[in-house]
Length: 200
Length: 439
Image (cartoon, rainbow over all chains, first blue to last red; front, side, top):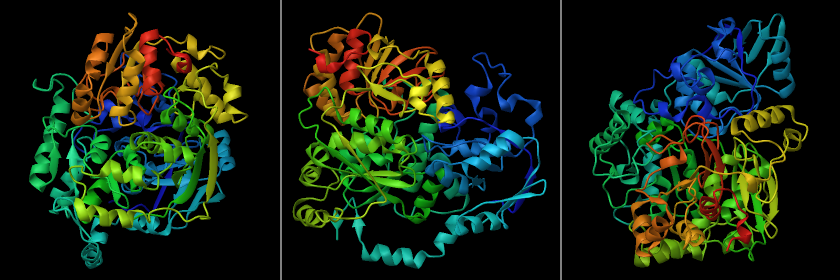
């Protein structure tokens, strides 16, 4: 996984709450076999009309916001289906950071596995960002856990383990397999086998 | 495992030259992409076909048991797990699907994960987790309600009251007289939709109902081993006086059949009431008000419209929420001797081959077909429109599934979530009816 230490970008303001993963990536696009290529289908039903024409008032279709790497949103982002394709679509499109009030648990986890930084901030701060900062540069420093906008500094919280994975670009499976002996000890102690029906 | 969320996980194993650590504890089926029509014909959708083939190849390569499209045990993953006795109390169960919470009905810790975590489990048989909060929901009363008000109505009502993020960061444990009175299938419906309240998982302490359900199933431990296990499983309950982080209770005695009107499962109301106004719904929360306005526009519904005035174009009885035998029996009771309205296309999709066979033994297929329903092969079907069963734009559907998000059942499709009895009655009447008065 690519390490994430810092990023400076303006935000794409997606001023909608309760965005579910069916909106982020509709089901017909879950049939791809890889992890890339989903960016063009991001928010598909909100970006294009039935004939495939871009819908003018959707924020991703505005040239003003193109190239920005931070998605700013409201509460409860990513509810619904566990599809990790939602994260792949956001990442593939170009978003490296998602900033909002709250996030669905599974979605939040999925982001952490793909090097996408999710920052939770309180409702008032997010409201402030939407009303007065959609054209400012956000300097995000993961190590300091700070966002600097002009000269104002906003602190954010993040789980230390998750932070270390992101900052160092660690591969979680390799780290787990380093504990192979512990896993074996547990398995030896709790013998479970479905086929042979031997449960101890 | 199923075909949609696994290909990239297997690719990851291959690229890193890793094996599946515990193929004996890994099971797969095909459900999301499969057509529910004649299975002897090749799959028309090329991309679906490729995804299904990929799962077959991956399971073969990594030594995983697959209940494939022709297998007698094939079905929706969360229907076949319990049916086969793979879901056992006290076990930890994961799947690349958020409705994995279904299995919590057996007192197992079961939750959905993304594809990267699927790969992690395949490689290590472990997951890194943060301990969830404990949320207790006590369900009392409701014992006098008949088939008109079901566990589907109960869970819709719960989500309506606590919201789509009410259970965030928590595992919800369901308790109370009502829960104890439920069959396993009814408990599964409640645990299934726990994710729609934002919870990680749902949980019901196992009891004699649980043990009797599991006795004698294909993968359940047998004979003395089973009896030994039951002794252990009886300890899987919360202590009296246990402290919960959150607690909530519902009295079910006066609960009416529920119908969703909007574009998330919390946007729900009683069948004998009307579409709420955005102000009524949002209770002062601006963002919720905007969501409600957007939802009403998408659903083409106006505040004040009685629910029983809403006509439907399609009826779908199926999904991991409500496609088990009891669901089909209830739905068939609603339609016996009656005919589907001429303005409605209706179908029943059994949750698994075993459910289908059992239903056919009871003659349910004939009841449905005589009434004018289509009787299909098992799969996720119209729950999420990844297979040929899709709503057209503007079509309104009474559905026994679990999500009514925009475009869920087809781009521009309008979903109303209800119980099997309510869906079946809607097929006959051509619109929603209060099934407490259904004869």
